[in-house]
Image (spheres, helix red, strand yellow):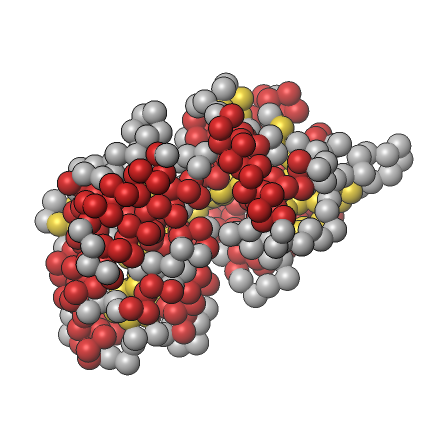
Length: 432
């Protein structure tokens, strides 16, 4: 992969803008390993170990386990919202106050590399890096830049159809197998049950516009198109992109979702499923557990490949969370010691119990994993990734790409603008 200085300038500009609105609390460059003392390191992540979220609880378990396992390093956690963490890390690192250990979502990794927030791992990790690479179902090409591995995958995810089996039973409907059936069933769920939204797609530009983009990309792929070409230039303003927006417009016109979707973010969709106001969604596997925790939801919420046509389901983007060493860390050896623990089979099993797909292949073959109540479901998700997964679209300007695409979706689906014109304007805005 190549990094781009223009993207670095864009990232720094983004950081400067966010600096006006996001306060920097208790920034955590390491104290370093003092003779006879403990190296105090800080991990910055989007997960919150103090929350009731299953993944947050797993994080707490892993961090506490690491701290209890040895006396040389102690890790504390700073939790930052996923929509803010990247810009805040860039800003903090530029002033020498960045984290020792950094969780980076794979689609944002190129931006972090260009902004210089991470240290290459080869020197400190040595042969351990090869072991992790050989065991990973997440391609290491996605974390390698100019020949340097910059972070280690610890989680993979797919976007699949979430559906309420109890509500399908209530209206006497079977699981949809085509996009046309999906629109019909979603509309019936609104008309014949108490839900507000039959199938939710969030069209808000907040939260990085993630919910819309996470649907537009596989919809475009399914129709034979690409979002960016090999040089990173936009190519979505074509028949496939138009067809992708057409699928969304068909859902809207059928009554699967209404104008409420305009203000929905990915968080809103998950919360709506958990609250019982949304019957179906195409969301990431990593958040199924959070939705099932809603009152009365539980195993009524089921997961299946998202339908497309008679030839098979939608393809899914494959992305995930990674862990790297911050550029400002004074104790990279201690940081790597934590990353080794965090990516261990034991830690991966703790996250798997919370509904997170492990990135290490060997985890799936252990007795501890097989003993989990959700082991079969997780293996099914992994098979879907193997058969229908594609690496998520990445760009050093991913946030700009998201913003341009969301704007096109809003105009075409809700305002009646010609979809090709909307996509052409989006391509121009991003490419310019």
